[in-house]
Length: 109
Image (cartoon, rainbow, N blue to C red; front, side, top):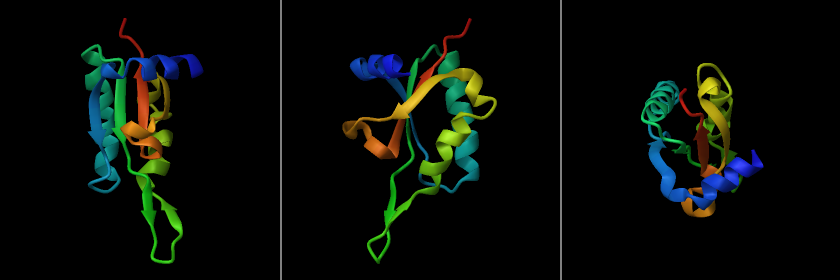
């Protein structure tokens, strides 16, 4: 995982697909994510940036983790996504930091 993440960070120009999933609830992003990963893999893309958002700060100052931020890693580990993924990790600050994930896709054979 460590080696693959550094390879992705070194070649950020290869981040060829982007999914902003924080706009419409939870059900739609699951389907969007599956379509994004399947389509990206079919197009020989190797790295996808998924933006989940970091959550929000409540009026009392407490930080609330976003639903998607907590759910997306679990979805990535479930079928059929897990079969497509080599690794995933939090993005660098300039690409969303804790509110985004780099997803490295396996090559189709």
